[in-house]
Length: 157
Image (cartoon, rainbow, N blue to C red):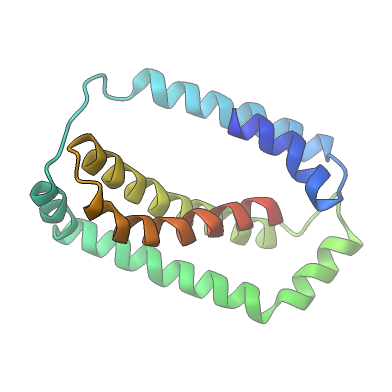
């Protein structure tokens, strides 16, 4: 629902026009990917205690993956910030055929912040399911910027 809503609302909010070639191609691909993920994904729910969640966060594989993701996101956001004028000018001059490197940087940033938001959202939902409402405050404070940055980069792309 949010993908279809974003397809319709984002161009209107940003004062842009719908780009049929890109938008109408990407939206069905995203929806197909979501359907396949839901179909093939695990069918049983695994509930974690807060101690188990902390233990999962301290696993070397998770720490390595998050470190690599944060470094890559930092480099990507820094590159976009330093080249913001060039990226903006290129998008304005050629809106129907954008520079793919610029598009991939925006997509990567949105996906990276989205991954962090999803991890935090899963943690918050597990804690709420166990009635640990007060323990969620710090996580929500981390979740809000990640979710806002994800939406920012989605709508800029």
